[in-house]
Length: 346
Ligand code: NAD
Image (cartoon, rainbow, N blue to C red; front, side, top):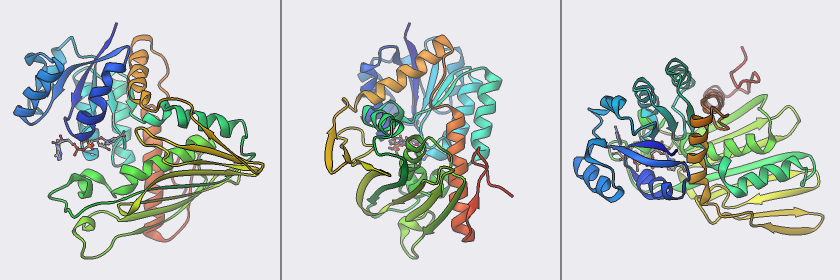
């Protein structure tokens, strides 16, 4: 039967993207809501038919442990709160779907994985692109060497953030957002470089930029740019910014062709072209909007059947290690050499 989810955090992404998409999930439904705003809790609870006894404030969340209708918690709070709320959900005996980035440090990710093991409950990171038809087709095309041997990957994820400051917007507050654009948006380029190459980088070189006297960047970086070298010899260049004209692009270039995705990882409206042998071929492998429901069904299956999770906590941990290497390189001006698990050598 269907897995009941508690939505923890009723912000923009939960309300506008994920919650409406539960309707298309076959084995998942919204069973409870958690919010700090009583008026919103009532309005959204009524709209989704969530009974009053399954509406929680952050303060009384822990009594969700006795709610048999709730199997899993979907953590969709600011990123700096993911670790604590994932641990609270496991302590309440629930499975967890946690939004990206998994957390803001590898130490937090390790705590979350340990909590999952202690509670004997599943942990999945909401890396929706692993369930999205264009990105799945791209993985297949690269694997089948439709571009020959993969050589160069270039990713760009940017937009220009309007005037704001850490007290107004958690996305520019270091304690909730880490370094900023990399954790929030550049993570899509980092993910794509890994799932397209199928490799872990053996070294990383990076640079960051934090302009002075701009309240948006009082605590976070404006741009993060990094270069990854893979054991095959392929290299990836990842650029992300909160202060540049918008783009969401992945370009995977091999010995005989290139796969161009733009936009590459949006909610919908993706575009993908394969250039090879002087010809250009567009792909339309399916409706991108299935990605939201598919990831819900994937966790539901894992909970019911004990099946493998393709975006587990270990993947989120791996990505935080790589982000730590990016910041370490930018901070020291040195190239970071990496172990196969993404930890830094030496
Ligand atoms: P948002 O600002 O719209 O919502 C955040 C929610 O958290 C708000 O309801 C806010 O009231 C609540 N909140 C609770 N405690 C808070 C605190 N201490 N400070 C600030 N807000 C607090 O953000 P969002 O865009 O919905 O992002 C939420 C999470 O979802 C983030 O981790 C983000 O990375 C992730 N996200 C994922 C995707 C995706 O495509 N997978 C897209 C957008 C956001």
